[in-house]
Length: 349
Image 1 (cartoon, one colour):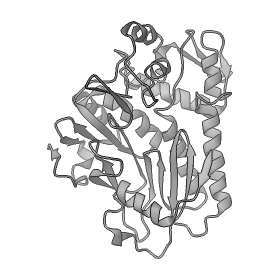
Image 2 (cartoon, one colour):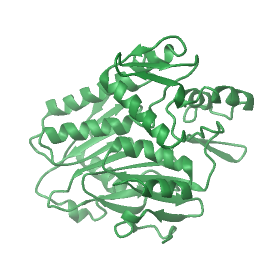
Image 3 (cartoon, one colour):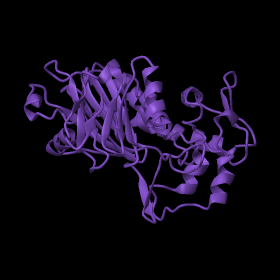
Image 4 (tube, helix red, strand yellow):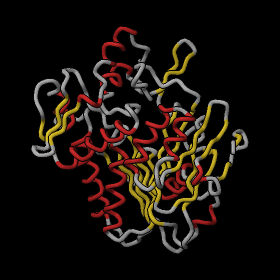
């Protein structure tokens, strides 16, 4: 992991652009000066920005150690990680893992069950086949997609809570916790900060945002929702947040073009191809980043109608849907608080 300090002016600019952060710069002229640290881990940039002048370099180093621990356990591309060992032993034998890894895998399987497989942590073989986000990505042969699709089935993961083992029943299966791991890490860091007395912070784990507490002065954070048609940092609306997390999934994050068609990284567990529906993006707003991470993928794959119903059925969970015809749909709990800031989008009541 690489840790680096950002100049404060650069960090504030990124916050203002990405967090909408409060879109009115005057709101940030508080007496407490923010301190920050930037890390590169989980193949993404992690930014921790908090309002606590007593926070030390050693404490930032402790956060880095937590991030490294999680990565060393959950990153399937990390040689020797617990998930890598589980995948290497697919179809052979169960692998004992830490309580942390066991809990994350168990949680991932619970969301797979809830979503009826629209979220599936065994998607690894297809992710590798498509290679979206890597140089030279292209559409694989249909026969190969169908072959690997047979390995995507969360019901073929066997957990033994007594021996704390994980077993993939078919040779070639591969767990990929990329759609839940950053959310889990965000929750762990947020809890650690609270335990260490921090009451006001913004955490950004590659777009998984946690608004911890409220801004100095007692106002809610103003979190900008990414405009899927624009570069990172351009928002289409703002959500006020206190102790909330926001996670978005959309076709704009990682993709390639082939023969005039866009192929994005959210794969359909039924077809083996990228999800093809009427959505550009989904943003989940809730109080646990692990949940928001898993739900953003699940609900995007469900599509607008089914996804709206699924979110409305959950307590303390809201969502913002952006469709390909530039329409915005929000769940009932955000009806009075979500503000559209880009007139290119029409909010549908």
